Image 1 (cartoon, helix red, strand yellow):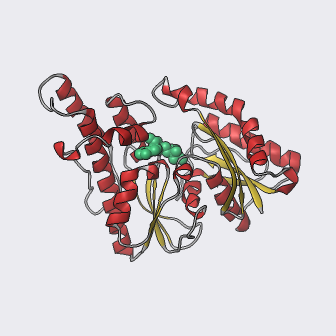
Image 2: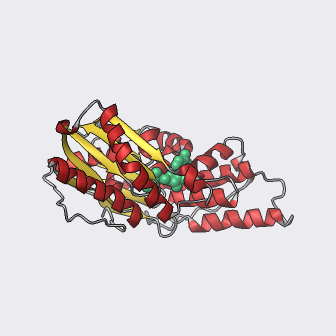
Length: 332
Ligand code: KG4
Ligand code: ZN
């Protein structure tokens, strides 16, 4: 069964066709990065308007690249939340209109479930039970899954999400937007051993906290600018030290969860799962099989939405034309 996925929760207009939840036939993403970079971050109203411009051409391209027409499509899956309300509305309205026009079933997808489902787009198929670390611009959730579509929340961020911390620190270091790839690039030529930054372990909790780390970076940069301290540190050193601090906490807590719950399989998901150090340390420091999606399925895309939508469809879920957006939708 071919599912058309539509994703517009933030600043990517995306459409994709996926067969049986696992085989990607097409995956089209129109990034708005250039539009928002001038503002140093996503401007919600600008994002909505870009979605309005892009959505129909992107859906058309997804079908064309899959070499399929409307009669071949079995269902439409669309991100209903979480995300920016105005952005979500464009995708949801497009999906409802297309479902009505072509008389197709409609499935509402939680964006975070989409990030998890991205791990089913490649081989080998992940095995339950598993621990999944979802780290994106808006979320840092550590999840225990004993079966498909069932989520137990072990911990989540108490303040900034991991990706948000990358974006904010990149701004402090004037490295540009989006921050994650910029920090990773800068860190490559830095020495993390030249600066120790604090980790918020939060005792036995699986929760995360990254705002103290961000403030610590700000203090270092301010002291350096005033010539009081850290004057021999480069931005690359600070980026490298920051990246290690974030990854250290993410990997250590994920490994501890696998030990406590006796789990072998670990999945990484979300935009920050594109981070090379996170991928490397997770593989090195966690004993069981660690999987993560290829880069193009880590950051926002519609293939992951089509995959999650297929699994929900198989479970009997349908949305109707009264579907609304849910900007604060949680996974658990
Ligand atoms: O999943 P995503 O594309 O959108 C949300 O659902 O939020 O995640 C975007 C986040 C941004 O904060 C971005 O800076 C971060 O993922 N990111 C990275 C990397 N690539 C993207 N963070 C660290 N290292 C990367 N290579
Ligand atoms: Zn996302």
